[in-house]
Image (cartoon, rainbow, N blue to C red):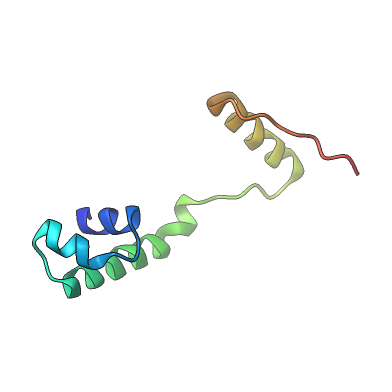
Length: 76
C-alpha cells in the first residue's frame, strides 16, 4: 500500500519510488496495478452518486457545511 500511495502522490516517477523504498521498478508497477485494480473492483460499494435532484441538493449541503464551499446558483 505504501508503494501505491507514494506513486499516486507523484505519478509517473516509478524510478524515484523504487530507489526511495528499496524495491525494483517492476515491483512498483505490479503493486500499483494490483492496488488500483482492487480499489476499482470495490468502488461501486464505496462511491455513491446522488440519483435525484433532492439527493444532489442534500449532498451539496453536507459538503458545503463540512468544507465551507460556496454554492453557486446557475441561472438558466
